[in-house]
Image (tube, rainbow, N blue to C red; front, side, top):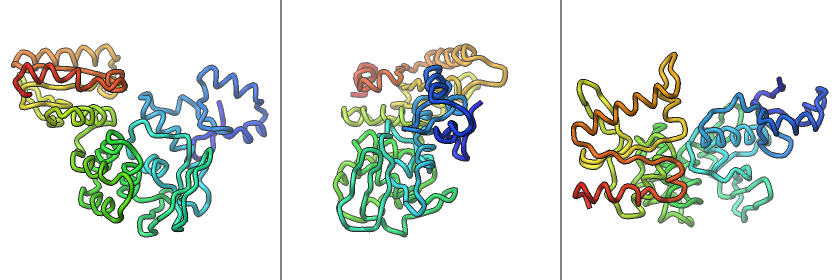
Length: 303
């Protein structure tokens, strides 16, 4: 067992002081027992979630907590990770902090210092200074592409941030990226369950396909189901995320049981006339969601 600090991180210096060696650490990394958070910081893999996007964000969150300087305000992706905002493939190479000065920011190998901080946007989480949920979501959106902006706004709404507050933060100054972020906020929907669903919807929007409804309630043969996406209750879209079946496991079940139950659900929906199209992270990463969905919408007369 590896001894971790209060942030769940194994520090190389402390491991060496406890009698471990660099060879021990290298072997643990090769075996997958430890994951590298950054130079000198490691995380036991057994303490991390299974889904890759959750795992990556949790590793980054712990790194940010471990590298936070006293008095420094974590912002952008770093604050978002601390606050639990779900992000789409964030750049985790740097820890982001913000300061009040009006001078130009600085980007270093492991740290990005932003300027223009409003002290009214600063909150304290577990003794760490971070920008608020709304400010953090807006900062990420302004410095990202459309899909990333949509995902972080979806997450903020899902966490209970008011759309009006996001709008006010976004319009508080003339900043680069604001036009794209405005569009993302207009389409944002807190019913999106995860960044993969947000990414899928972003690809549909960019391809000018009809925007689907999310989490529609459908009753079939006395059972109630919810769809990831649907178009006029004619076509249902399902995003098979990395942890979808694990999340739906019932006590005593294995993954195969959840897969069979999903197959039964799909068959029931097909029996009452739905067309169902499915895709996963691989399709999303290849930016092929619109191409996957389009033929189904066309056949249903929705294009």
